[in-house]
Length: 288
Length: 237
Ligand SMILES: Nc1ncnc2c1ncn2[C@@H]1O[C@H](COP(=O)(O)OP(=O)(O)OP(=O)(O)O)[C@@H](O)[C@H]1O
Ligand SMILES: [Mg+2]
Image 1 (cartoon, rainbow over the protein chains, first blue to last red):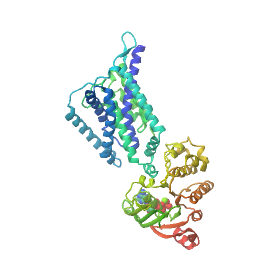
Image 2: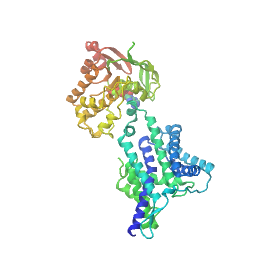
Image 3: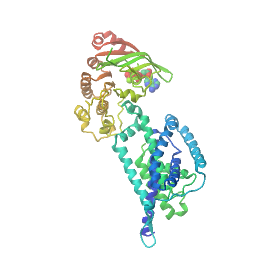
Image 4: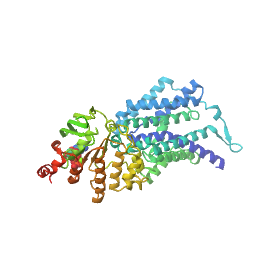
């Protein structure tokens, strides 16, 4: 592999990892703070991609689709939390798995009824088309760089939100002792709702960003869900920074696995997960 | 009583099927200090948790400034100016000392902001040296100071202290008592549970003794001090 194809693969790995982080961070937050295993999290990614398809067709631009899609996703997440997930906090993981698996089926069926089972494509914004030439044959698409940039900005934003704001302090405190947070006059249920809606919006945004580079297709949430769980487990359940490291690791394992060991491409990610868990059973930044 | 801040009427509280409080009446006037006494397991903590809505009573009413808060969530009760320092401290070990304090900051019910971060620092100078430390890295006494400081950051009208000096070295306990005394002397009302009955009856205006989830005695703390046989009977001293 020469230096430029190595660079291309590295950029791909980072971009893929960062996109996974966007999905996995919501999953790990909702688990770490509310104790909820949400199998339907991948459906939010799918919903985002379909939202991008629908709204781009309607408005003519993916940018508008994203501007409209994020608040829609947040509203949807808040409503879903208020109607369904709020009943799961005090229940066992088995109940959570049952309900959220049921939701996957419902979301897929709704997708089928609303937009059908065809595969769709979404055009990227015109100003992000084109590539940066690297050598005579290789070039790198600007759109993928833009995805990475957006994800990095969001990761920094998430860091600042959790570490530097009062809301972030309340979120972290709530993951430790919800009664005590309430006894300080803080509405923990509202905080849960905000966190859940944020997680839904990030997963949906990942789906919207990915829409132009991967086709918008039925069941696209499934693969992302599995990889996100791998990321969460590798990073340490509940740890957002673990999820970031885990996502990049999985991004590299998947991307370079396909290049270096194509015959093992399908299992590379799981080999990495197994290796990490043998070394650190609670994940990279997990406790206990 | 026009200036009753907090009132509990006929509280019956259960943990599952075990009936813990059997019709407890309890009130706190504005600015008043009440000692809540009783031997181990008599229901002091349960009464406090019922007052806060953490373990809502199955029967009975909770009134804050005359408003019925019986079915209200804990945060609403707290927002009415009630702050709680729980048994076993309840700091957030995953937050720094500064964050533990900042997250709670809030003006009081009447809009007063007497307790600020700086005032908490002046009251607990030891905390100011450990602001960047995680809450879990503090000593027991420092953790207790942090929990009290955090409660004060909400500018409460009523501060509830459940065993604030439990498990502390005598000198550290003394330091906490001095601060509690200052708080009692200020316009903040207090409900205090503590094993040190001498100190307790000295700072409190009134005493309420629970026996098996019922109020067995109530009266001024001066009066209780003068009745050693009552103390022996109910508190086993
Ligand atoms: N979570 C719980 N579930 C069931 N029973 C409980 C629970 N907490 C306390 N109890 C019981 O309720 C009764 C009252 O307990 P409570 O903690 O209110 O007593 P206390 O007066 O605060 O005692 P202490 O001085 O030991 O703190 C005890 O018999 C105790 O065993
Ligand atoms: Mg107790």
